[in-house]
Image (tube, rainbow, N blue to C red; front, side, top):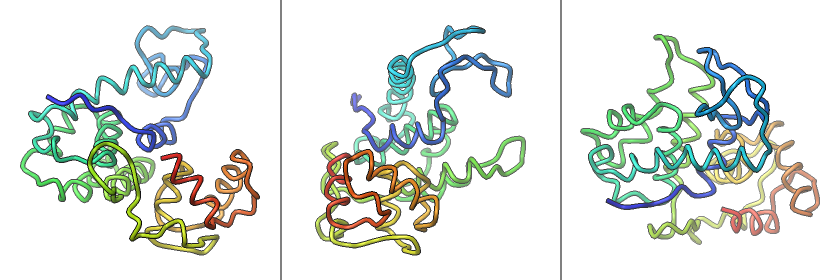
Length: 224
């Protein structure tokens, strides 16, 4: 059985949807929780640092990496590229290993992104938050890699680093950019993506104009 690890794109997706709280709180089920959805050993009044939250996240993610690496849960695990692996780990982190097995059993590797978007209900009710997460996971799953060695690399033929995108832009290039900056990858460059882009550009020492050109692409793609 393989021992692959989640990549930065997968971690960014999980962080985006889980959110981080450094003071313990009770979730909707009454369970004491902290950091990025961590529950083991958490108690009322507990506080942690951001570094501890990151460590707990890696600890929790490791549990689900094992299931995605296991062919009895994911029959085609040896054929997954890094983005596909990351998307399934995020899915498992949110819904548990049982749903990963249910999702992957009897389906081909190419049927997964469409099927995973059906998992957006709780108590029979469709939840917008789950819909957004499934769409983001499907977009990451479908994002092409140059190879399947675990090193993330966008194909040169896609020329994302040569395509200028800004508010109003739509399409796959926008989805890739949204994954890079950690927002919902819906392919629409709206006000939220523009604001997140400016914040990201400022953080990386670039002109914070909200317009993604060659310089932003070069920095962003290297961060994947």
